[in-house]
Image: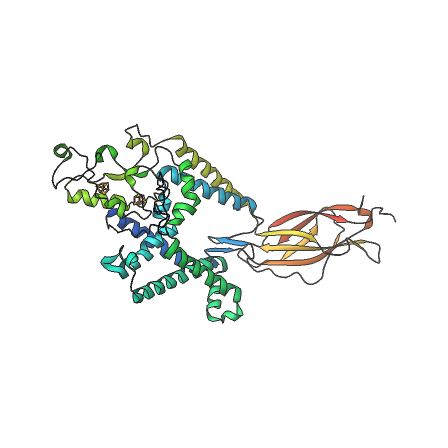
Length: 467
Ligand code: SF4
Ligand code: SF4
């Protein structure tokens, strides 16, 4: 701010990371390695390990997870979903959202603190790097400036981890084999993927070195949604106001009964560890990501003062206000019931799927051709996706016209597992079969594995069959 400019203090806290003068308050939370921190650490490193491992895993020869957007094929647990699997994909998406609602109703914003990629990487990869480089000066180094050598090491470490993260993320969309090919080839042979890798790495470096907790505070929609998904019984990290207030300093081994103050000694340890910069003593706040660091910090203080731990703990809004707590409530039955129904529908649809998908399309050009014998020829294409585990060949017939003749431009190819083939073919029928310029053919396709599909297709012909 320029000298002489009078800045009015804001009447309320706008953002925990915003100073009164409008500048950013940089957060460099300290860490308390309590029981919750160790548990989160195990979960975080397991998730990060799985993130790197999954692109290398296969299931029945297919990638465990491959979201091939360009080819519009999504492989999950060995099953390939196509854009035509609209119902299955819709069921998956609805199921995912319901699972999030259910988890939030049960455990509050547990995802943010225990599974969100931002939190996992920030708190268990990037912040430990900073703490290691800054040593005991962590928290002060930002103000006075880290020395250039340490800054260079920090930048190199950020770029390395962000590059690894970006490449692994990309491998979920293109597959590991494709990614390895890009690694060994010159970037000139694949400029666009190379730029995507660079851009994503740069975006991650920007995020983890600059944007950081702003994602949780101002950008992430889940934080906003939580207020409607939480209820008064949901598990939240909360401060026991009745036990802690009035807060104040007391001597060691003094108890609230002899000091006339509550158990909170106003040491602000819970605030210093908070990665979003809030004070949990102000009650439930949208910025709280349920990371449990304030629980560990306060338990540590209480232990040193020989007082019971749990002044900050997992609780619920009702329990905090001394109202009856009811763990079992209608939504805890509603969500799993709907999820179960969706699951049953999903597997029923999945099981009813044939070993191949097929669609009949018209060839470009004339709608039909009259042959030298006076018959009507329709030129068509059959697009087939072999979803089975073995190679297959096909037989095509017109089920409701036994005298129809099927012609092929070339021999019907053998279709490999999980491959899509387009087979041009023609149907020749006597012109007497056509009325009002068309014939509704039932095209029956039988695979060598014994599966059968009947597709409806309107064949075109002369509007007057006798001329
Ligand atoms: S850490 Fe515990 S005692 Fe210290 S200020 Fe926070 S709530 Fe109070
Ligand atoms: S208030 Fe506590 S649980 Fe919430 S984000 Fe801050 S430290 Fe984590």
